[in-house]
Image 1 (spheres, rainbow, N blue to C red):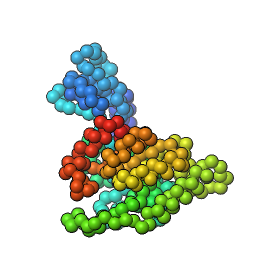
Image 2 (cartoon, rainbow, N blue to C red):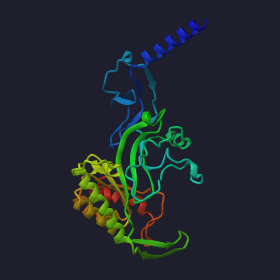
Image 3 (cartoon, helix red, strand yellow):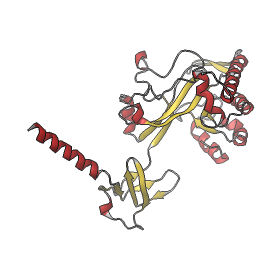
Image 4 (cartoon, helix red, strand yellow):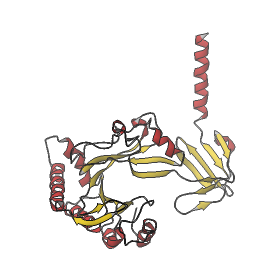
Amino acid sequence: MKNRILKLAFALLITISAGAQKPTLFLGAKAHLGNGKVIENSAISIQNGKFQLIADASIIRIDPSAFDTIYRVNGMHMYPSFIVPNTTLGITEIDAVRASNDYSETGGFNPNIRTLIAYNTDSKVAKTVRTNGVLIAQVTPRGGRISGQSSVMHLDGWNWEDAALRIDDGIHLNWPASYYNTGWWAEPGESKQNKDYQNNVTEIETFLTKASAYAKSSKLMDLKMESMRNLFDGGKTLYIHADNANDMRDAIELSNKLHLKKIVIVGAEEALKITDLLLENNISLILNRVHRLPKSQDSPIDEPFTQTKKLHDAGVHF
């Protein structure tokens, strides 16, 4: 009896797997392609998690036998999944519970730290954002001067190997602030100069210079230096977290001095002040979230919303 049940279950699995070889078709939805183009009556097919067809259903001929399942979704809207960058999804659960936070390590320079292997596919938080259309995340470390390496992950998977989409896509550098604000959000104080700023920048330059020399020729194995190797041939991106205009200028100057190939600035709250410099050096941005107050008390209240439009109109990439 047990053998019969096992054979029946196995046969059922084979049938399901065989049926799943054909793509799934969605017909009739209003499709938003993400590039500004909209198809009012679309035909969209998906197979193995990838788009196989995106077309106007009113001008193509469709063979129903070519699809495993056809869903008629007239009156609905379809769009690609959202991708959330610079997030700790999957490496933290409850901020107040230290044992559930795996986004930061001790020490100042940790380029060898990888969020990839720390990513938790059983995260309860990731499930809540998936239902809102966020299916992919750049899981990013925090803390220290160099936090470590981020990876782009699917928010659905059996384990981190299964969820990995782009492994070790870049290294994250937290640029020191030349000025810092005192007080707190309800009672802001005056801005003060960071007296250790130049020393901090020198530490960064020294570390990156050593990494550059190691990448050119080294017979000894150093895990931290090895993690930095691909920064200098364009194989890996350096994400520089900075907000002040002067800090971003210094970061770009150092990057050019060391011939770093791919630079992205994260945060960039004062990016409008250095638009020409960003265009000249072909530097992309990842801006802070829009649901926040402006950086300066003198800034317009809608600056977090309008900044992106102004930068886009100027030709800055994101």
